[in-house]
Length: 208
Image 1 (cartoon, rainbow, N blue to C red):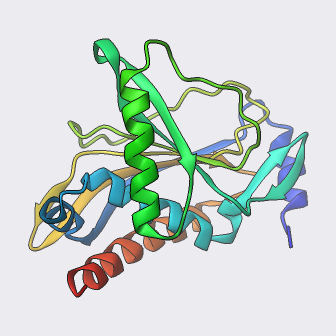
Image 2: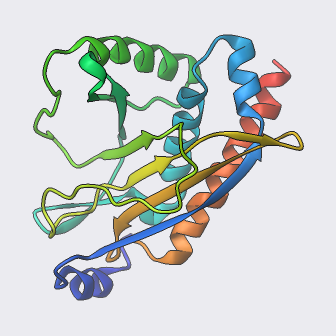
């Protein structure tokens, strides 16, 4: 049940109804786990972020023609380095089964990396989450492009360089979302959920 209509009405009248928070995330060493299994570490983190977003209720809502709608089937969108060293987009349907998720990630990554033009297809729905990775930087803030100031309801997340310290992985993470849909508390809950998901995945997968 959507309980934030008054918030949506309030912030929806703003020229830029965006809230953007950057902080450090600390979790179990998923990088070592991924490398040992031959997986891209970012793929495992992307999986954890997608799962976490579905576990924090306010992050399940998007705007469609000004109305809040709950995401039931999530699409995952992320960036790759494509032809000529230029950014390109990859997207695929989320699946809670890690093996299925990884297969979809790898398959579309090949297509995205080899595409000769930008894969900016029109969104058939708003049921996306967008994630980008800047593995070279421990950034302290980031601003994502916004196509339509009135509709910033698809969360945009950026993660930075993975650093290892005392058996933990730390990295900067930025979360940009519509303030009518989420508050700072919910962004904190997403950070906490991502850290918990990744730590849990490390424990579970290391015992498989």
